[in-house]
Image (cartoon, rainbow, N blue to C red):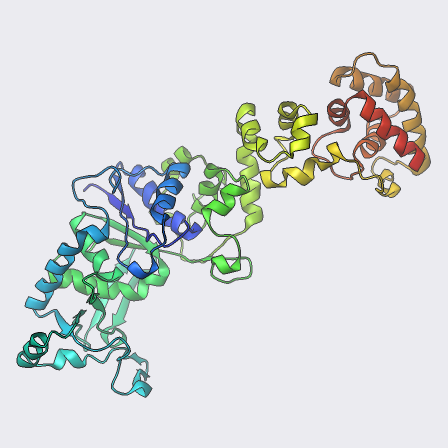
Length: 480
C-alpha cells in the first residue's frame, strides 16, 4: 500500500507552529515510506479567509523545505486541490447520503438548537441540535422545498449506538452516540463543513494516514460514521498531543509568538525550527536532539509519537538553533548575521571577521545588536567592580597595574593583528610568571566594559584597532 499523507491548512492567517508540526509529521511519514505528501487548501469557511494566506502557506512550506508532491500549484491525479473548486463533489455526496437515509434536510435557523435550551446538556448527554427536522415527513419536506425555504444537510446519527475506533497514538476509543449531535454536512451556501469535506476529500485523494491535533478526537466518531455510511474504508487516524506554552496553556497567538514568521524574523533557521518541533510529541528513542531534515526522515517513526502534552520552550529552541548555526559554513553564518548588524557596526568594523568570531556564541541572531553594541560605543559608566574576579584572583589595584604595563607594551607594537597582540600579552604574562587569565581578564573588561562578551580580549582588540583599544585602556586606568 502506498502511503499518502496530506497537509490541509485553512488560509485564515499565519502559519502556526502547531500547523507546521502537523505538516512536518505528515511529510516525514510520507518520505520515510517513499510515499506521497499532498497539499490541500481548505477554504470552505469563506467568512474566515484572510487575503494572501495561501501565499503564506506556499512560502512557509518552501522556506522549511517541506516540498509537496501534489497540490494546487503543481497539480496531480486527484485534483482540484482547493476545496472551493470541489463544491459539486460535496453536493453529489451529500445528496447520496440523503438518498440512502444517512442525512436529512434541516430548515431551522442557525440559532435554533433545541426546543428547550435548558436541556442542551442533561445527564452527560450533549443534545446540541435536537434533530426536529429529521422527524419531518416527506410531504412536509417537499412543502418546505416548494416554498423555497433555505436548508442545510445534516448527518443522521443513530443516538442509541456507539462507535469504537482505534487511534494510532491513543489506542482504542469508544464514544456513545448520545454524545454526538447531527452535524451539518452541507451549509446553506452550498459549501461543505470542515468535517464533511475532510472525509470526502481524504477518501477521493486516497489518504492513508490522517494526522491532526488531539482536540479532534471527539469529532472522529462522526468521521467514522460517514465512512461507514459511504461504505468506505477509514484511513489510519493519528492524533497528535497538544503543544503547551511554559505556563501550561495551549499555545496560542495571544500568549506570545507562535507564527513561523515570528521565529524567522528573529533569525531562527528553518532547519532548527523543524528539528525542534519534531521533538514536540515525538522522540527518536535515543538521547539525540540535533537532527537535520535528512536525519529526521531517516529516524522518524509514528510509533514513537507520544500521548503526553508537549511544552514549547523557546530557550530550548534557541539552544538548538545555536547548534545549527555552529554547523553552518562560515559564509552562510555571515549571510544570516548580516541583516542583524547595526549600520554603524557594518560601517566601522570587519563584519566578516566578526561573524567568524561570534558564530559559536550566537543562538538567536536577533540578539546580535546588543551583543555587539560595545564595539561602537563603550559605556563609560561601567562598574569598576567588574575588574574583581575571584577565579583569576584579580583586584582593582592589580588590574590597574596590569593595564598600565599593557598600555606601554601595546603602544610600542608596529603590527596590530591577533598574532602580534596575543604575543605581546603572553610575553608579558610570562615575564610576570603569571597565568594568562589574570592578564586577559582586566584587558577584556577595559576593552568592553562587560562581564560577558561574545569573544575574547585579543579578538576584541583586533576588531577595535590599535588607537581605540589604547584609548579604552587609558579610560580604564583613569577609572581605576
